Length: 237
Image (cartoon, rainbow, N blue to C red; front, side, top):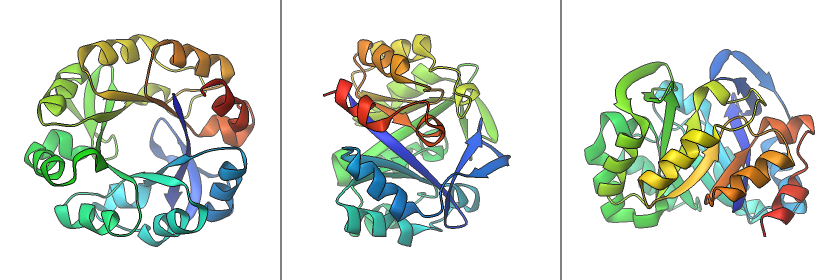
């Protein structure tokens, strides 16, 4: 299982949110590049980055930061937030990003997902964010009547190979991941499933590893010290 330490960006700075609520924004580090270099020292090969400004403004906002991390650290950058067009995808593909995540497009523009997968293949991942089991979009501000596994099946049919699943009620809470829903989506599709939200400590990492997931995204737990990144990476080798 791959451990993805996370860096979310607002106003050029690394931050964390509680359940995706922008009113709870808290800066957790002074510099994204410096933070990413610390992840490298802990043994990370990937970093999960999100342009939170981009997710709200529906366009690329902090792209220079992500490109800098990719070029200067050697980390593979998985990036979401504000990626809405084929032009956005091409831009990041040409500038050293290793994978982009389409989120709201999965619900609102499935044709874009199909086109992107056709052209870029495994470079494309889809983020499925759910509240009470139903998919949400637009930075989690809009809900839908589509059950999360139904959306996952649609994405699988579109050719998507990698899905990042977030239970919004768990994100930033340090209350443990939603193992039940993760097991449900992992058995519903053959895609690689990455867990996001609620991961607190090494026990959670071991539980996720036991579900045979592809990856786990760790943010707040790393910044507050309840999870040592090096230990998480070590037990997943």
